Image 1 (cartoon, one colour):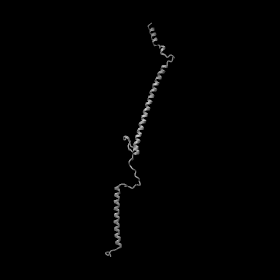
Image 2 (cartoon, helix red, strand yellow):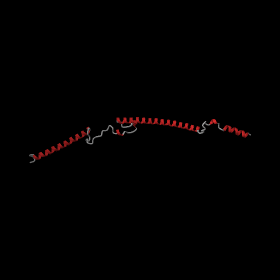
Image 3 (cartoon, helix red, strand yellow):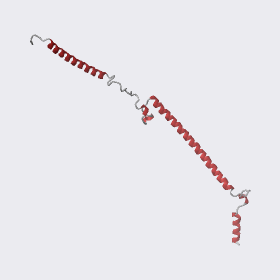
Image 4 (cartoon, one colour):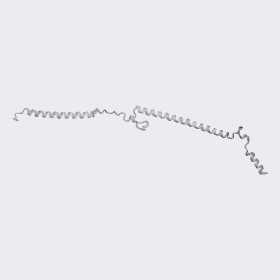
Length: 150
């Protein structure tokens, strides 16, 4: 008798009551409700991550725009290096250096170059004038022989 009584008590406690089931008789409603709650939580988390990603992206674009503006300012003012000395600005690499026209004579604008060449020209003129003077004296001697040579 004891086993029968124990079996009836266990059956009475383990068997679900009608209050545990929804009134429409759908047993999967609770599982559906839990799935919907999980999906809502996932959607909320995904939306928060998306908003955070958009905010990070906006901050990234703002920083890049600021950096580009700074670099453009450095380029416009003729700086040869990027902000912080990170690299060389190729457009301004030869800033401050004038390209010399190939038709310009060598030494143009150099006072020492001019002085040296003026002195050389004077020396050449002196040599030429000395040679001319000697030639003139020799020519005069040939054209007008003196009494000593006769």
